[in-house]
Image (cartoon, rainbow, N blue to C red; front, side, top):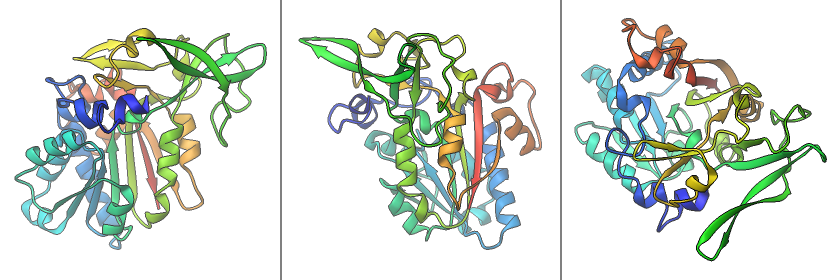
Length: 318
């Protein structure tokens, strides 16, 4: 999955993504309307008001086509925009170019490929935001064996020009994982683990000294996330068409987005450290309504039968 998404020469995000939105393979909530951006803008202002020790740095990880950054910045008055610095961490050259085009009229924006460089530029004092970041990380797909009561890695193998699936080695359950001591699964149940995201996060979080962080993504708590989903949540998107069979997911390596829902029970446990505190965890609809003055009741971002409940907002602070 990592090769299909991030290979330097043929990866989807590095070379083949066209854009995010109507003309791409998928849309994000920030490309559909700006309700989320307005609520984040309000959240940012509240954090700066309550703590005068916070520098006016905003760090966005994985900014898509730049729509969220553009909307957040436009909701500041001109004087406030002159005082703040907006930092973007982006590893995709194609998305970085889209962002620069989208944000060409905005000032005081810097780009980085690594979180460590961005945090050093902020001296570790910053607000951090991400929207649909975790789901863009490669996942470990694992399968339950009722006889051994263990999880095994699902392996992708190639035979001449075709791909096939096989059961691999035993999966080592990580510390604080949501699946520890849980065995109420049917035979061959598949689930995804965002281990690579967790490793990446703990590779830089010690450089983040003070501030707040919003992590927004689609997902659910464990085990509800996998209820009536025997094959897990892994899927691909190609020109806004969704494919859920592994054969289809493997059919266009490097040409389509591959993603999986976030197990927030797992992520919440494994992101915590001695210095990181979870402030809140809520549905996107609750976050928007609690940080917005005017709300359109028809806004899809707060639809409790759609994006409003499918997307979660995780809030940490240091």
